[in-house]
Structures are given as structure tokens and as C-alpha cells.
Amino acid sequence: MSIELSIPHMLELPWIKDCSSTSKVYVIIHNNTDTTNYFYEDWNSYGYYTISFEIKHKDSIYSIVRPPKLWYRNFKSHLIVHPKESLVLPQSLIDTACANKLSESVQIFEDGWIGFPSISDTVEIRAIYQLCDLNDTITDEWISRLNYGRDFYIDFLDDDIKVELGLNEKSKQEPKTNEKVKIIFHEPLVSSWQRVILRH
Image 1 (cartoon, helix red, strand yellow):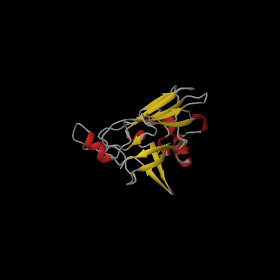
Image 2: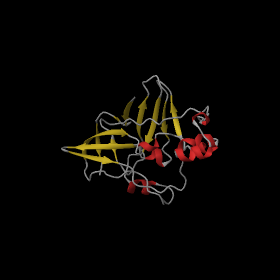
Image 3: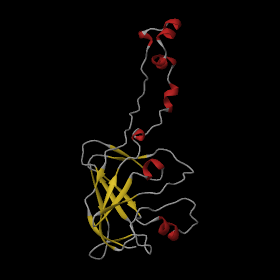
Image 4: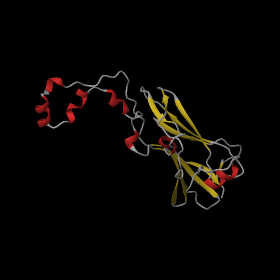
């Protein structure tokens, strides 16, 4: 797996954090493996925070991240990336103030990014993919376990209770399911540094 940051531009170097523009940058994740991989969509909290950026200026590195956000609806949904395919994630790399100013409607939820340094200069930037919480690696909410028979839960009983109920090892049954568990890709990916002009 690899990650690439692509910033289309017309001049020698691209500009970022320009409040007069909604130009996109593109985070591209390439599946160079022979395995299908899964990634959360970014409309929900599980995928919204997986992408971040780092800006390097002289001896300092600044983390550019999503601000905390309220979610009026939220559930896990994912994209499938087959072997040799790529996932393209468009991003408007502007701060929250720019995002709210450029919006056509009233913003009640924060959007954009935070962490930009207060400078106008040539800097280097890179993109990072990382799942925020490793407990979210499984796409499904395991509520389906409630559909299994009582024998599935024998393992959770104390030995004394098993004897009292007349249960033994032979009565144990494994749950039957035809659905393959989908594991979200969760290894960190970091793109190469590239030079851009940061506009304050």
C-alpha cells in the first residue's frame, strides 16, 4: 500500500490555504497488493479523521487536522479497493474560517482544517493516513451476535452453572455465518514531502 499527495497547479509551485479558492488537493491511496482492502468513507466520523497533513517550515513541523465535529447521523460505511486499484480522496485544504466563509449556507458544524502556521512562505507538505481508533478496524457492529442460539453463550457461563444446567463440552456450538468479516486497512501511510506555497 502507498499514499500520494497530488496538488494540481498552473504555476511552478501550488498554493494552499487560499481563502479565495476552493481548489482541491487529492490524497491517493494505491493498493499495490494482491488483497482487497477496505477504507471508511469520510462522510462519517470513522473516516473523517483518517487523513491529516504535516507542514514543515524551517525547523518546525505543524500537524494539520480536522477539528472536532458534531454528527447528526453517523454509522460505519466503507469503500472497497481491489488489488491494483487506487482510492482518490479530494480535500479542500483550507482552514475552518475559510471553509465557513466560502460556504453558501450557514455553517452549524465545523469544517476545514486547523493547525496551519501563521506564515506566508514556501513550505513542504505531506499527507498521512491513519485510523484514529484501532477498535474501529471491524466494519460491522457485531449486533448480529444476538441472533445466535443460546449454545453460543455457554462459554460465558461459570463452570458451576454449566454443571447445574447439565451442559457439557459437546453442547457448545460455533456461530454459523456466511458473511466474511471486513477489516478496515489500519496501517499508517505517509506520502513524500513536496514543496508548496502556504498563503496566510
